[in-house]
Image (cartoon, rainbow, N blue to C red; front, side):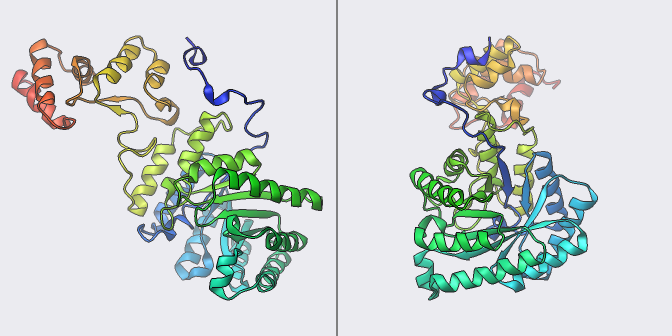
Length: 411
């Protein structure tokens, strides 16, 4: 039976069309904004190259490969990653971050010219009243600083994305001045930033609608990016709303790493976009991508983390396991993947896992033994289940095998 016949899709009730008619792009900020987290390690260049190839494999459109103005190591890594994009003929496009300062943009220009690939300049400056107050700036100072930076980058032949930090707390009259000036100087993108994770879905719809009106009124072809953080726990949700509101490119980081509580988790955004039918990327490497970043950045993945967490498709509950086992006994992998999971494991290179614990039933034990090609017998099964019922947690494999060996010494 088809999944559509088994699942009533409340998510689509009242929807009159697709979430978006655009081809949505993704910008991976893991190797720039992600490693600004105070709790992660800056990966080795070997690990960065591995991550870059996984980004390519997942069909990620662009990658922020660093802020070369930060120092010699950052510049060297940006140069090596650019070289890899060129030599391996990768389809992923490179961009780099820079403050609205010529001294930050100059290294990007030099690397682009040396390696011979285009590198988009994402030049940023704070725009909100609270940031202006803290820095003793006014909007005219921000405007003059941004104009010099954009003008320099455009004259050097670079594509420019103008990034207003803290856009979601900025005044419309200030944004109007800044955006018009940036577009007039040749910026091809405006990046709407929820730098401190302030925005709610309503705020996103209001702000993006306003920016779109400004662009349409100017009669120009300028793209919109969404760059969100997760301070309210809305990072992934907001990214989806921003896409639906009309943004062309969505930013995020692997596992949501980044400053404070982090950025929107790009892996979760892409997973949801796949489930919503917005993209058709092959995401069977998404778990590998998460685990590679986890290892390279020394950032442990929580056990209950969506998709990549150890417990994402793992159950020891008897009722749940019994339903999955019945589906597997029918050789119906679609049913097994969906009966107790909102995410089909097989789409992402994983499978359902059944363990044995105090909430388990005999079906868990039978399945566990069958999967390991261990002869199933009632005395053995009862002994394993009795051990599980006496425990306060799911049994480790070694604990189950200890019981098996007492009944089947030859194992």
